[in-house]
Image (cartoon, rainbow, N blue to C red; front, top):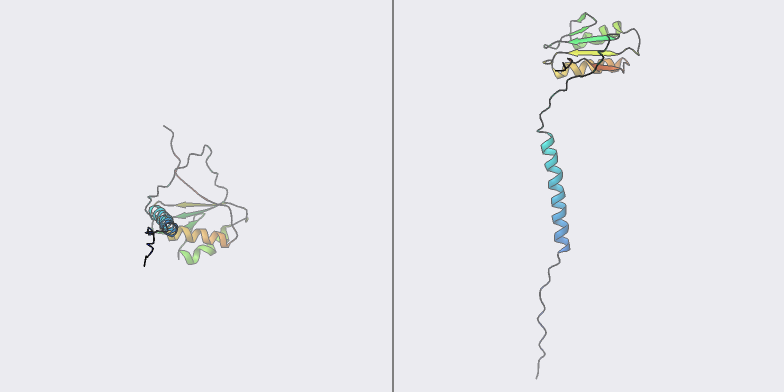
Length: 136
């Protein structure tokens, strides 16, 4: 009896699924790495270089380092609770700009509350006062 020898077949590895998995892993790593770097950025506030200063025509909200408010010189003694009342009393027209003068050490919460109070009263022209940059 004569047995036929089968030719030795080389084992075959299909690379397509492995390439798919590697590409998906690479995409995942690229996306998560870019998000990690964004959260570690240091923020430096810009300086204004406008040639014309803003004329005080609207409502001025002053926020000091302790988070106390003054609207056009009128103190809002209870901070957030009284700010809406004082702001509503000082607004002459809904199109008047609201100029926020916030101390550089003012709490973020105080600035956000001032923005929220202005928006709830329908005041949409809100600007932040900045210290002018002197040209050298």
